[in-house]
Image (cartoon, rainbow, N blue to C red):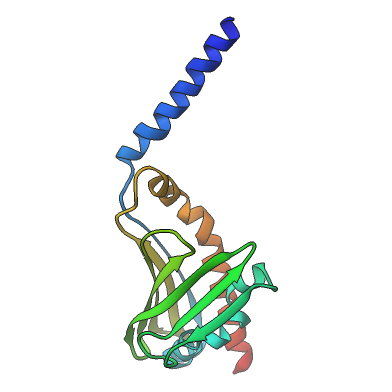
Length: 177
């Protein structure tokens, strides 16, 4: 009987923590990673804005080679999109939402049936030795409690993938020179 009492209290404490802790968690999440690639900013920008070439460097494409990818809209213009669907990577769409030729691009992202959107972006900055490419992500107004808890895990979940993707992009672009 004592064991059941302790188990009940333990379950109640865990449940309470799941509901109370997220109240104090941030409503927004963000992360970014950067790499210097020995090419001009326009070369890196042109590769990233061409969604049809993403499978040559995108780490998520490599995770599931059988996933389906498609593009829609006027290429390299606001509204151009890339959609994906797979068992491991799930489904979603990213749509170009802001562009600054050779310097910056942003995409609005939706994931499956999840409510809301997030933003991913790329910045291209000329530096000594090439271009500093920054790949970032942010999402605002995370829903309580689940999305706020997931917000804590974004850096560990996506950080490594962004590092790998930038390393792949660097390799692809520098081999092409």
